[in-house]
Length: 373
Ligand code: SF4
Image 1 (cartoon, rainbow, N blue to C red):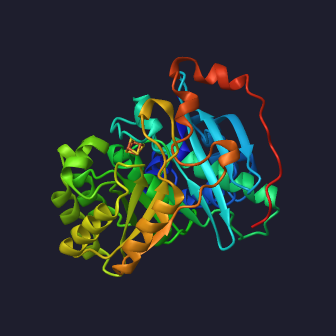
Image 2: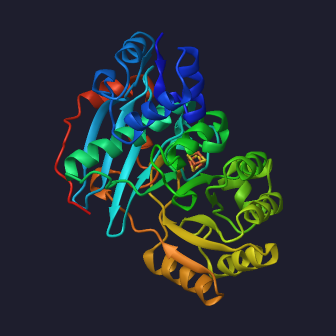
């Protein structure tokens, strides 16, 4: 089977080119064609020798994901559903804002962590994505948006990446790491490490690995101020309880001292949204001495969860309490509600994995032009 060149970071591509008898600078040229120019056809790569293009045509390919559907929201949010084979689908979401374009990428088909409030978690785990499948989401979105938005050469549609789609990225570390390196590489997307965020439910040993290998921005799904409640909401807490997790966050920041951890907190009616719990949260992060921000997330209800969304007044009161204690706190705006692109909403559609692709193919694809941001 031909090698998928999206599976390689620059080192990997240099090794692949070496196996074809080519020098390293050829790998850099090829890497730029793929990631900076969005080329998928070796014949386009005019500054590569014809002999190399022929070798590549025989031995390699740039394998896109197959699009099941693409929906564009009234607010410009774009949601792609990609078929990754064997009845599995993953989602990728582009969120345009005035000063940035953020792409939310999936790392696994399904998820094994099983957070109670997450519809992907209820769906169960199917498989890890490859590096090529993780990067194809960025590659396809960036180059499609550039064409659609008619961007000038050098202008980028995607300025930020968040690994917050389906899956726990730190449980797919060996595929994640080369993908992060490509995102940061100046010969590819050239994103600064503060503009690439890995969001984790708290896989402590892999937080340590990420700190050593590629300390990008880190977001941690907290969702509870104490172990008793977090054990129920995020089952991984039983393995890596709060004090261990917070110690790993503190060590992470020691490698990136000007950074902060973003704590995600999904607001669940009557479960984790009381003033007492806000105060406990303040004590928790103060005692742990961690530079942090809070992001409060309105819950997207789905029937199997048995949970409901906190009323907006309670979310605002909770946010105010954290802010009054000196913690920077934002409340996530729901985006793309009209196309079910808000966090965790997709899995409701794809729960029946065995037939999901066939079922979604019957759903009409709606493609509208997005507004330039
Ligand atoms: S919130 Fe994240 S880690 Fe938890 S089940 Fe959902 S995808 Fe997995």
